[in-house]
Each structure stands twice: as C-alpha cells, then as structure tokens.
Image 1 (cartoon, rainbow, N blue to C red):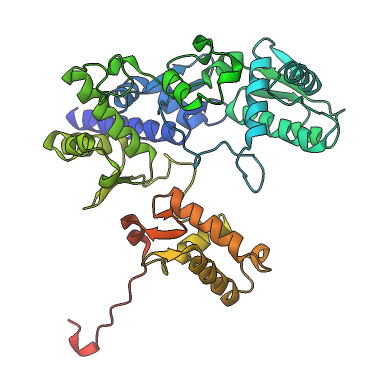
Image 2 (cartoon, helix red, strand yellow):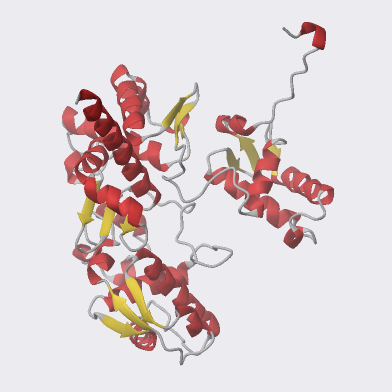
Length: 412
C-alpha cells in the first residue's frame, strides 16, 4: 500500500510540475488548443495555484466549463523582446498599427456572440473613424487588410475567436471574403492581465502618450505590497512583511520569466534576499517543485527546463537562420567586439558556407548580424551598448572546448 501511495505522490508531483511549466510557456491554455496541458492544470489546479501565488504572486484562473486556464502575469515594466508575433512564416513582431487594431477589434467583439469578417472590418472602421488619435481603417488597402488579418489570427490562436466557416487569410486578397466567427467573450476579457482596469483611470486621451510610463505604474500597482507600488520607496512606510513579500515575488518573477538572472542586475535588497539561507532554500524548492534544473553560478542563476515546456522560443535552435548564426558567433565573441567586427565575422561565415543562409548571401551580412545579436541579447548572452557587443557569463555555456587528446601509452 505504501509503495502505491509513493507512486501516486510521484505521479502527482510530475503532473504539477508539467502544469506549472506548461502555463509558463503559454499563460493562456485552452482545451481546444492544448488539451494535454489544460487537463493537467484542471486536475492539479490547487497545488499549481499555490506555487504561482507563493513564489510569484500571480493568480491562476481555471474555467473547466469554458475550457481555458489563465495565468495572470503582472510585471510593471515593458519588454520589447517579447512582442506579439504575426502567425506567418517569418513570425515578425507586431507593429504599432497591429497592436491598435488588436485592441479595437477585441473591444468591438465583446458585444456579439457571432460575427462575419466583413462586420468586424466595418465595426473597426467606424470605431477608428470616430477617434481623433487612431487612423481610420482603410479596407481598400491590402496592407491594412493584412494588418487586420494578423490581429484576427492572433485572437484565433488565443481562443477568443473560433472559425465556423471560411478562412481569415482569404480577406487579405479580397474584401468580399466570407468568414464566420464564434466569439468567446469571456476569454477575450481575460486577455487583459492587469490588477487595475485602464478605464478606471478616467484620463483624457490626449494625455495618455506623454504620461504613458506613469499610467503603466498605476495600472500594474499591486496593493498587497502596501500603498506604494515599490516597497523600497520613501513615500510611505512599508511593513517588513510586505517588504519581504515584494522581495520574494520580484526575484522569482524575474527568475522564471528571464532566460538568466544575473546578480549584478538585482538591487542590494534583492541580492541579499536571494543569497540568504532562506532565499537559497526557496530557490531550490521552487526549482524542484516546478520540474526545473537549477544552475547556480558565481555570476547568477538560471532555471533549465529539460522538456522545453516553459518557453515558446529555444536556444540553441536551428529553426531560424538567425539562431544558427547567433550560436556560431558565440565562438568568436570571447571578448567585447564592435558591431562592425560582428558584421565582418558574419560575412566570413557566409563566405565560408555559400549554400547556407541564401537569403543573406547577397549583401545581407549586416542584416543577419543584427538579427543574430538580437537573439543573443534576448537570451541574456550579450549586452549591447554604444555600438559594442559584450559577452555575458552565460554565453560560456555554449562555448566549444578544444578536444583533449590522450596518447595511447597514457591511457589506462
């Protein structure tokens, strides 16, 4: 009986850890999109909720009847390295226009259970036409229709829209495309992951652009840490309990959200907390419960997911030419290099392999170098400042060591 109980306990721990990492990889999990992860989260929702609440202060909302689970992640900072992406071959990031259309379309869809793509376009055109700041949607323009399609396809991928008939992509070619959608209004509302609704600010639209950073702080304020958003401020007195809670959540949010956490990027209080005996104990416990492999180095720490469930991007990875170029450049980035030196090194790579990266072979070394450096920067492997690319300690994980040659007479 005890052996069976042990097996059941081990199975539960494994399922909880997979559910945790699955939600980190896709904070919105639907039964229709990822049924395996959704089923894990549904069955093990209580221990998964406790893990996220204790270590990160994030809420997990599970709606079994509606078929989705939502990890509500809050971080009071912008990060351009994690944009929404177009669901096309190049997976280019959303530009400002696509973000605007995504927001307008989502707002227009909240009042209808079913709708055609023509009706979506017309309602979006009317909404943008009556706004003094947003340019009016021009459905006669192919580029505008493509931008609208990119926004709609993202909503489809997230589960907010379900195609009943037709194909969204057809609208790029013609305004007369016939597509019918079923709208999941409840899920659309859950897309906004904020503790405070933007509509509660009651701010004139003309002041939004110039006060954006201030507004971002206001709508991401979490009152559990005290009256002020950051407990290290001198504006109000924060209790020791609130301060310790903020330290734990701020450190672990960065630890599981960022590819690598360098000690040099932490505040003195955060560093003292993480390197304390309590912090180290919590760090190892969080990694074990989440199914991560913890790497502790002199310069920082990182969590490795052996199953790659907790991320939607990987490195090393040969899916994109830029990723391959980034890995090859790491062999040369043993010391700081200027961007021009990186471009020259990239050009030599292209010359050495004429059948590789054909899209970059003709005067494309500068573009490939820029994309490769962006990959390395996003994974915390290099830092770019003043036109100089400096390798960071984590880059040594991917270095190629010279082989050790053992003479036959020295072999055991």
